[in-house]
Amino acid sequence: MTASQGALAGLKVVDFSKFLPGPYCTWLLADLGAEIIRIENPRELAKQRKVFGWDKLSDEDNARLRAHDILARGKKSVLIDPGNDDGREAILKLIHQADILVEDYRPGVMASMGYGWPEMAARNPRLIYCSVTLCGQTGPYARKPGHDPVALAIAGALSRMGEDPERPAFPGVPVADLLSGSNAVIGILAAVIARATTGKGQQVDIAMSDASLALIGNILSRNPDLSKAPPKGMHRADSGIWRCADGEWLVTTDMEPRYWRIFVETIGLPDLADKQMDRANWPAMKDRIAQVMATKPRNAWLAILDAAGTQFAPILTVAQAMEDPHNHARGMILDLPAPGGGKVRHTGCPIRLSDTPASPAAVARPAGADTAEVLASLGYTAAQAAALEGRLP
Image 1: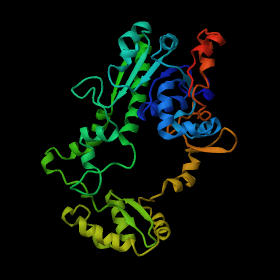
Image 2: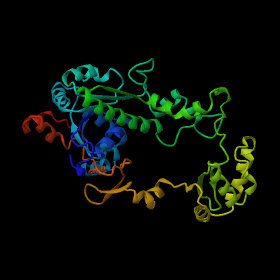
Image 3: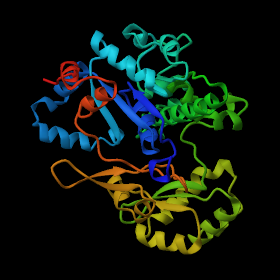
């Protein structure tokens, strides 16, 4: 392995995943140097293209659209039907050579196609088999279908989201999906380390509901008697979201006493300095702060708070975040070459390593673009590969 290859160079991953947690996991692995071979089912892709109207686009437009898919970046695409006998034979050969398999079907589906964990472990004892599902491989909800909000609901986390104490609210971003994908990476790499000692792979069972339970850990820690937990929407006065005179927003998080004192003195409310933990008066304190913050435009407050050294940030839109100088300086905003010319904007890898840095690869190629190459590596002739490769209508 060289630094330019990435920390995970040499690891081969067969990726069956389709929904956000699995592709997020394998995207991180790819950026960190692993070889990801993505199994794409032509029947499923055809349905997807029809639902979204992509079947009416030209090949060039579809290629450019796919290039925008950040989570498909750096992955090889094999367009092959995993339920077809000939396709299954090729996929089993891939799995035999692989270090890791990632899948996100409901429990039992992979086994029904001939790729269940016990069977694959028998074929490849060193295989690390990661299953990412809504509720895991065991328990009464194991076969339950659902997406991110369902996992949050089961964990109690959805009940704490939003400002209205009478009504739960959807989060604005896929919290459970991304947390589960990150847990999958951690579980896989832990299994890789264990394999170095045991010589054996193992199954990594990731449940979105398990991941979501981690989100309420702070509530449990601070409220041993949950019947006395503060209602959702009751926030401390020392952190808040404030509307400025120009209609723009900023956030402050001055929760340490010294920062709180500096903040209230800076905005002209020094009498609040010793009342930080006066819970009964938090609503009134927040109202006073809001009135003060509404007297100046955001840029004025940003300069004032920066000079004071308090904890704050402008609340950026997604478009503004894409132009933020810090995000660019951190290498988190990428402009990658697009098919047909021009650039597509991606986010970078959120993991920074000093000696073996992540190296985001090229944008995703069209579905099946790597089928012939991958099948050739398994010993298939060009004619055999052409007969086996799936086709999109």
